[in-house]
Length: 158
Length: 365
Image (cartoon, rainbow over all chains, first blue to last red; front, side, top):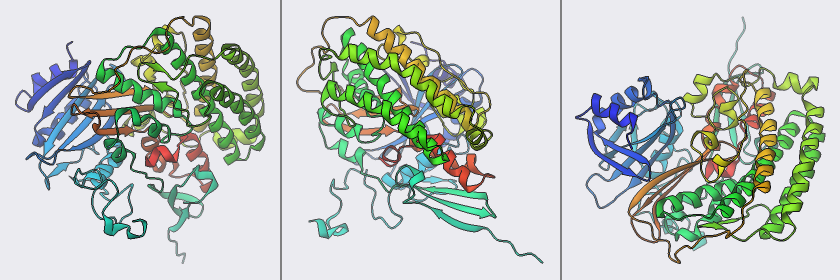
């Protein structure tokens, strides 16, 4: 099934796309990190794609791989009713440019990814922990973080 | 010489009008809000981390406990996401029962919202009226599955059980009754001068800003944006039914009230059609004992009572999800609170939190 946003991307940024995947009607395009903002702006502003709603932003952890984290941007167009998933891969310690200037809603999603994965978003207006207390140690959704937390964090319950 | 400074006031975390444990730091100039910062996380239970350590079949009860007011939608969204991932087929009767239960849950969630929203603003009577009808829905849930709130009614490939004897009649009695009861609520509120003063022109957010802040559900439609997942990308059996998507024009709290009340009527319409055309046959299809999806990723969205609920699952081919992500509409909608409340009074913040219809369990996950 042809995807309008993907065709537009291929036409405008042929060198930025690293990989394309299809599954169950969903289209995924992995793009280069350094082109992220450019691509996002284009997808949002271009009349034919008009992906104005950032439906979700989430991260994944692959501790064994060199490019450890993956960040997914689920985009939706209210006018055209199409979706696309944009993703980038980054290494541990690398920072990602924030998309909160493109979609304001990314602000809290990025704070959450920072809180739970320890991914830094450069240019973010308020990159602080959001779900966990400010003095929390570690990032729980990283795979090496034990399910019940580090023993020294709550000794009373053990 | 006058000396003025912004006064910082903490609202919450324990405040009855925040519908849970939410802290809002308000910067006040007199009684006018110049700054507003929601602080969340008090109910964080790490459901995403828990899910990574559980089998696919063990996760639905966790989903119910995220948004405990709209648990059927949460449950449905997760189940459908896994079904999409594994290619599990659902028999037609199962799909219809799902729609009926999900819509009943939408009505019950909107009833809770209307009652507590009224209570926040000072209209106490509505609360008793709406909870009376909500009780009937919970009774229907209890008759169906034994539980009332965190129901866990759906299974991969269908539903938990077939509808018990007499359930369809009971449901029909309820939906015949509800429209007249909705009129009662409207009689109490729609032309009530205090209600109008407290809701008209409060918490205005333009369509453009609403999309930019990622609002979904009645909050987005209140700003006149026609986006309802049930219409835009129909899932389950929703494409078989006729219903309208109410839209607002003034982008304020009053319009969002009108929309949610109208949505209850539309849900009644959907349930009535589903009951009339309820097909026979199995309520649950054949499903393998072991749920073992292929290596893939899926992002499934459904229209919950609060907006677009997203379920992202990444599978690595094992019996547990590699990553489970819940995108909750409450979390996203709450983010717009500072934009919507700037320039208003403290009392209006209460109204705006109410109109956003957040469930803190869903915000903090």
